[in-house]
Image (cartoon, rainbow, N blue to C red; front, side, top):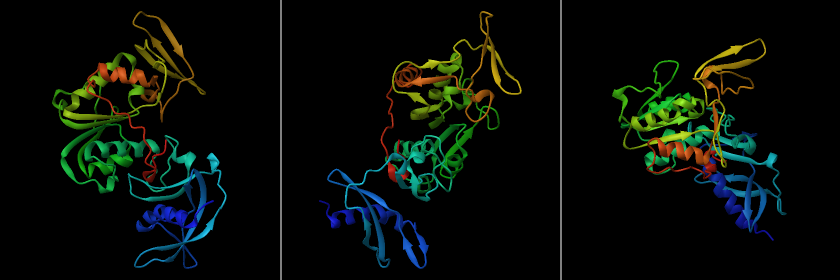
Length: 316
């Protein structure tokens, strides 16, 4: 048997943070709030509250409750969250969108789960806690560098830290396989988000080594790549040497001549957001990724961020 007072108190805690941040929908002079899901004694109830007083503090009462345990279908699950990149409130977004690694799930800045996870990890490593990027203190003594970072958080990081976003194909340029000497030991952090799966096999170790060389003593690499939990890393083009892309009207092929002169042609290519250097070269495995890190300058310890933080839309 459920206890209405207990459920009301639990639902109020969920909703008050959104009211305090200005989240609301007025209609006919009334403040409407999203339904929330509350767990009590191992069962879930769907609850809707209404506001009967807003000042000097919010007072809620139950408007609707499903008294029997509510079975939430995966496709019906909704989540309300504060985007930790732009600070906006997103209300009742479908969970299958929020938990999609690449889907734009913030209605304001269009951040994805991956982008919010990058800022979450950066906040914890730099500041010791997870806070929104708009609340980062301005700290020009902290130096960071990004490798083709997403502009949605890159532009905001520039306003907070001594941070520069670099690119392989445009200025400001940085080829991570051939870094300038004056960049060595310069940065407190490096962000490489979904870049290393595009580096050729022969240059992969060099790329990881150079990311380590960019860092000051005590600095850290914040790395994301698509990877699988088990098995070995799958290298799709281990013999890539002298290659080019051949595009017909309907398809793109990869032509390669190996060091030994063997000709290879590959089809069914996978590109991430474009052609050429966005070609997916591999699928890392967790063990393979840890090994390439340890072998190339990151033997001092790796932390894998696995935990959810649903208030900021991080729900894997």
